[in-house]
Length: 86
Image (cartoon, rainbow, N blue to C red; front, side):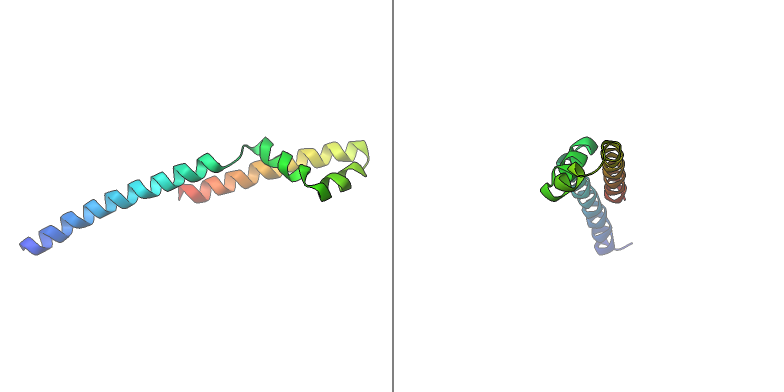
């Protein structure tokens, strides 16, 4: 094996390690910025248009919508986590 190819191989492994570290750091930073599922659901339900619409619904339907928002928020965050983990 030539000295040149040995240098390239060493450089490649160093770059791979550096890239892996950078990717992990980016993932960690992105995860830190994600809201909790209940916070996300509250934000969705706190939208003025959604709040107005929700207030016009029967009480039992309001509870179902709030539950659906929590499920949606949880599923959305889970999907983001899976994508970031790849």
